[in-house]
Length: 107
Image 1 (cartoon, rainbow, N blue to C red):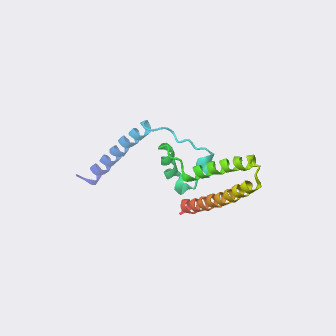
Image 2 (cartoon, one colour; image 1 turned 180 degrees about the vertical axis):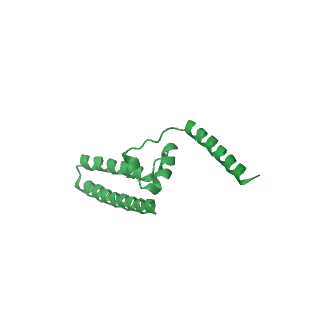
Image 3 (cartoon, helix red, strand yellow; image 1 turned 30 degrees about the vertical axis):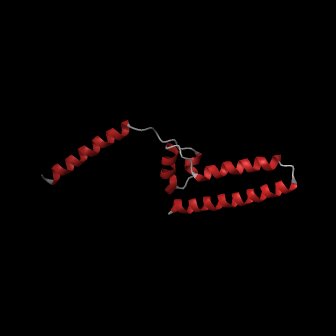
């Protein structure tokens, strides 16, 4: 088999593969979340999203929203202080996780 035959076979296989890829899948939806995600994490997060598994940070943000609602409805001073402390700790935890994700996504 000559080099030219090998190159033709490779080109034919690549063309066949490209036709197969074009016929499969769905177009990528580029939304604000995609653009805000660090490039190094876009593929892993996309896979998780397709599998129906939200990133841990989404759950933490939901917890933060629930804590804020409880804090707004709170009337007991001591309970409010506990909720404010818990909210502060949770926000700090979220900030650390998001910063770590930013660093991880760049590297």
